[in-house]
Structure formats: structure tokens, C-alpha cells
Amino acid sequence: MTADDSTALAHPQFAAALRELGLDVEIRRFPHETRTAQQAAEAIGCAVSEIVKSLVFAADGVPVLVLMDGASRVDVERVRWELCAGEVTRVDAKVVRETTGYAIGGVPPFGHRTRTRVLADRGLLDHDLVWAAAGLPHTVFALDPKSLVSHAGATLVDVREASA
Image: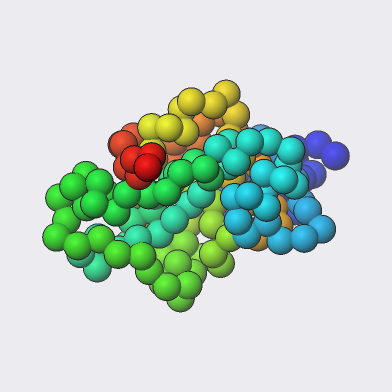
């Protein structure tokens, strides 16, 4: 299957974003949902840190997307500091869908329903290739992290929770 053919496996909104950006990526579909980074890594056969989590938070009530490697957790205080926000909180599934157009577990790093500020943790750049959701909980695509950050319009930041 060519990358062009494989976009039919992606969420239609995400497939349209790929076309608009002129990106030619291969979409992989799995028989079972890969809603967690661990499930996705096992299905792909890669390290959990090579999975991109697309997480939606609210900074003073305004949605913001944080791209984080699958092996790490977001430090909400670092996000708050980066955004000069008074408060940063996780949002519920309804806000994720309203903001991005996708369900939790399938949120890609770009191609969202609304224009949202995007932060990408610098740790993503530690890899040659990363895997992210293609709009559905059982689809993924691979891209080099610099291109992914660029297409997401993300600001590179250090928002990874410190190791214990």
C-alpha cells in the first residue's frame, strides 16, 4: 500500500490536513485500539519514548495542546510557567473533542478543528522517528520529530516531569 492509499485509513479530518500540508506519510492501522502509548509501542514494535502523546490542557481556561513522548509525563507547573498562566488543568473528553475534532487516544499533533496553541517537549527531538495518532485510536503515522513539531506549529519547550 502506498502512503497515498494509506491516508484512507486515517480520520477524514486528518487525511485532509495531510493533503493540505503536502505530507506523504504511511498510515498504519491496527486491529485493536492503541489508546495508550504502551499499547501503541507494542503494536508498532518501537520504544514507548518514540510515541507522541497529544494531550490537551486548559491554561486559564484556554485549550493548549502539549506533545510529549510516550515514556514521560507532563509537568503542569512547567506548562503554566511556559504560558505565563495562572492555572493549567487537564480537560475532559468533551473539551478534547470540541477543540481537536478527535477522541482521546486518537488526537494527532496537527489537523485540528480549531487553531490551538501547541507546545512540544524538547525530548521528542531525541529520536530519528516518532509515531503519532492519525486521528483514530487504532491508526498511527511516523515522521521525523523536527517535521512533526514544524507542521504542528509547536513551540519547543521543556515541560517533562523530572524523573523521581
